Length: 413
Image 1 (cartoon, rainbow, N blue to C red):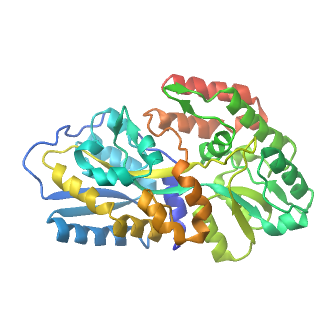
Image 2 (tube, rainbow, N blue to C red):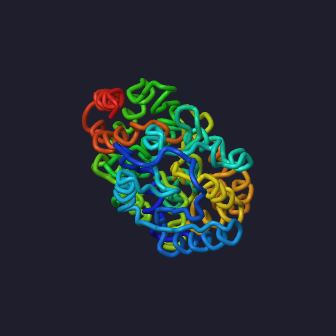
Image 3 (cartoon, rainbow, N blue to C red):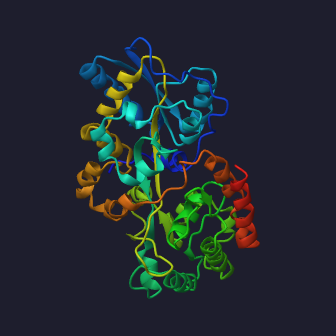
């Protein structure tokens, strides 16, 4: 797998983050009109080396095969939320937008659904979990471009020093192992816990999913459910027992990764770009396993995807449909995903990637991955509140912290 360093900042910050929402977005709401021959793609930059190169080559193939022209604009993840929101508010939406949030635009009636622009064979090939989270109000709008999934990383050298023979399968085993690791001294951290403002919703998702918890159940927010309170209380217990690093409430994921890469942390939640960085450094002898569950049941993973959404504009429907028909051809979508160092979004892609033995733990769990509720237009605001406040449950009351977040969600963000 070729993974550019910027890719970690791409999907990692991009897909796990959220857009600013449509707000009072303008834009045409009809697909009728004289057929257009040129459409515009605004795409997020996952890496300097691969993103523009892929889309430029794609545009050439698209022109050759369909006769349509694709105008490509690649934008940094740092700026794409603001730039795309401005375009849409100024009634200058692109035809295709690559972003990490779609539901607010779907709510405002600005997007084509799959019935209009996605070939039936393509929709049936997309992994069911991504269809589920790409569906708003019963219709599929959020078409995935690539994905990532989380797994459990452990330092084999530290495990051996601590007398631990295999990765934990339950939370009780994880806690016991973390104590053994911390007892090694010399600054060794049992479990690197990032509940800081960068991406605490991602870390917490892995834990709550593996305790049978959810962010939402149907239309009902479940942030302060008994299961989730139990989960945050367990993380507070790890913190109080000093088997984590100092001040996990202020620790971001990049900091936790750095601890693990330096050989100081025994365990951390990671993903394939972290593995690539570890392989490049050649400093840590590590293993990757499914994340432990509270009761030892089958492990679940937190999945992430970004979207290629299509805006309704007069006369663009055929050209947009041709775009998706080409993008989801295995020689296109899988080429892009491999170059950027991420995971597939189609059933045929999972089969195609099976030869990548380093990805086995992710591919095994990806079809059943659970995502944050990106299909809810208020999720972006809820996510921001989680990032800012969840860590407070480690020093204060887990119940009160989750009650406050529940209230935020029920009030629409």
